[in-house]
Length: 282
Image (cartoon, rainbow, N blue to C red):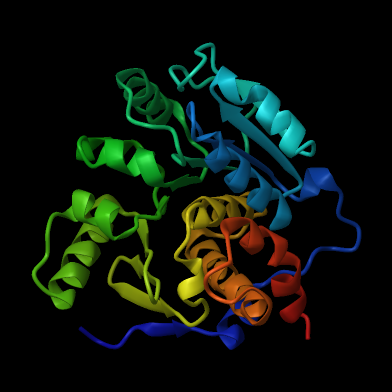
């Protein structure tokens, strides 16, 4: 395999579009996060908050009923729509057509949720980020990927990747299989790890930010929020994926001197997004 392209600050500065001085919330994109189930509403909170904190003008979050108060109290800036079911998602009905949607964090694999995901994929036309349980459900129903918009971003961690592409015996085989998967389904794969790689058909990109502090619960949920936000703001998927992983990693690099590896948590990713953006303007 040829050497991957490096995602460096220089590269990101070519992608980054600073906010227009005349912008208002309606021009900054409306993102939707579909996430959470009983005991995992935190995933919806993390993804929604990181979506807002990455520059999205408006965020609507779709959750099961049990998360309503949690969302409204923990992130007053986010609008909340609930499923008719209390503990998990069974029927995704959105009151709008957003600029981008992130789906999967903490949704679980209940049969009702699987059916809801299929129906959603069948009718959705918005740019999409698929993560976590959405990927786990799809790994058992790969033909559903034919329903997703071209250049949908998938964000598997190693185990989720294995469920999607099958086991591999070497790093080379892992990349080979992931490239073949990306080509077949016309999707972009963010291969989370240390380092994180992005596979876009036969092009392979390696992120240069991030450290072991990111190995913490909820880290992937925040990445889903960041990627959804960038898509909603009008970044093309091929650029949003690079910019998103770069920012996500950069928050950990900036926070490390204060938190150390052990006490950095996913909320610190969100807390340091402002610094990450500011560092691009230097």
